[in-house]
Length: 175
Image (tube, rainbow, N blue to C red; front, side, top):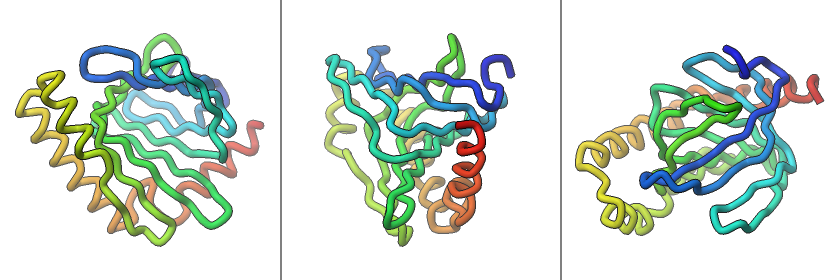
């Protein structure tokens, strides 16, 4: 797919339901890109928040986006293992050299031993009221949380033992 060739760089842009830009990861390298899926990697990349604050990621990360799933998954390689941060979000779109998605506040943090915690339920409830999330959206998101938890428990997709390591090795060949 044009702009998603392996080795090329893209931005990752997170939006809120009201269309406001939420967060931007300045550069990520495409490892695999199709119309349905993007696997990318970054390390020490600049992140800009909606209020203009910036920070830099601390460790290498493998990012997984899918056009049919209402979540994305970031596997972070740390000294004591792989940690995952899963954003409950809209499926991604790719336009203007950027992977774009709507962040729906809820997150799942997964630890190296595959235990996990659902985060930001209060933030989700607040934004749901403020931005009038439709009831059907609430249902879609909750169903996708259950689907994602099954993936975690089954070590499926990005949670399989070799997924992050294999894609990180590929990333190193491009650096």
